[in-house]
Image (cartoon, rainbow, N blue to C red; front, side, top):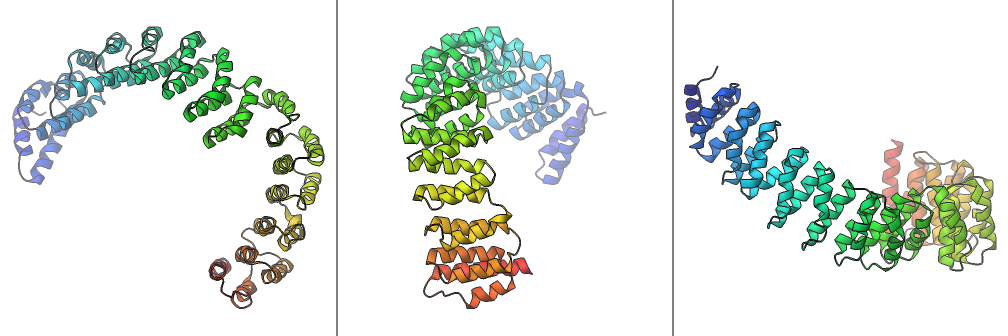
Length: 482
């Protein structure tokens, strides 16, 4: 059992210039378990340096209990930031009514640091007792305190909090308005929709974004027509991003067409990407009717995109519609989109259409090649070699895709001898860029004889990049075949 003499000795040793004695004294302090000593220790440590006060804070955090709260509150009010921060860390370890009451008192009489700590702590612990005191801070002259109070009230929640926050939505400070709207979106219900919807025209883009988010959280579907108009007209990329993201969550047939048009035409890359993701999130039963209506659009871009969206569902019932459109539609762009979408289906019919498309117009054959890469199986070796050779079209993209198909077929394996022989022949009969693609392919699927071939028989000339590719391929093969 420690006594006051031992405490005084510990304090003296904490002042010792030698680190050994300071460490020993610190350990002894932390070994004290008698909370009744705290009042006397508080008087002793209050006269000491900041270093000793910090040690005392740590001790109080270990002791916890109600007796530790008053001295920690005093230390929280210390002018030295390090002492106040250490007191806050120790208070975080305590949770009792005395601590709550002390922090509420701090809300009224504390300094800036202690008030901020008290607000955050009371909010994080969900202390309902503190609500009325936090609400008073909503009128404070310090905007940072007001913002922290809003966040704390949001975490505590409750009907009275909603009523108080509603009064803030017309505040002079845009950030306060933003936080209040966001909090109302989290705490309220759709009855708040009319109060929030008017902020869709606010001058601050962040407030408009918060209003969009809140309307979605509140489930206020009556606001969707306004959001559809905003998606076309709002100048802020951030706001349009939020709208398409919320549409993906809110769902419903009504948002599908606006999302599809945003996916195609919005000038922001991020908005187009989020619109794409949102369309994926919406259930097929909501999308099917508007998608099918869009297949009759005159605009090639819209028509092509909607066929791709239908294909991305992977539903076999749409396959006939897609293959018919591929053969009948006069737009190469639409055909290319369908060729891209056929990668989401399997079967000989699909592959047959894609193989035939390899001889079509440039944009169509390139998308067909990409889809064949995704659908590759063990029967496609000859197809790949024909693509590399340029039998379908002398198109670098198709020829390089052929090498990628071979790499995919024989990943981490050695290709059959007849395939390697064909690739060896094609190396020296192909243009430089195709030659490099074949060399890289051989580095992944070759055997020992391929090393000798690459080292001796490839015509390099002055092509330094080809020489680098050959060296890389040989090193890969040596590692793989060891």
